[in-house]
Length: 168
Image (tube, rainbow, N blue to C red):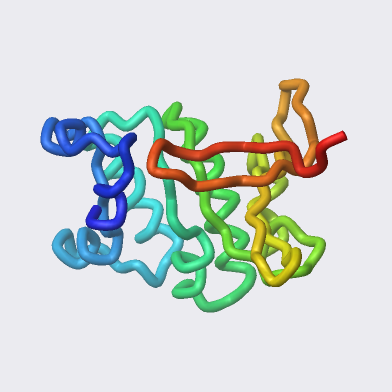
């Protein structure tokens, strides 16, 4: 919250009115006595938060961190698949943040996220003249025509600005 307050698009009134809720899944699960080392425990926590607040949109930051606690690759895959089904059933549009190693040509850590997802937005960076340049590229957006062109991404006080990667 402290980091967000410096941006013009941040509106504390929305937080005060519970129209924007930032939940700490680990802390909330502990208070509710929910076990986060199981697929059913994490799903229970996410479902209850979405239902309790009537959420139509959610951001899970990060799916990679949540899955790390599950132990095996099979449990991680099961969780991601179940999460996709449950969120669809709940009618909640969700952005899942997933970390991938830099300079790799993969879109997910566990190999299942991109199949469950309706869209993939890839945020990367590259070095040019000793500067790191952030980029955004829509890799997949199911059912919608979209550009796959990589754009330069600038984070400003006013929000995010996308600029062409190369000018003619």
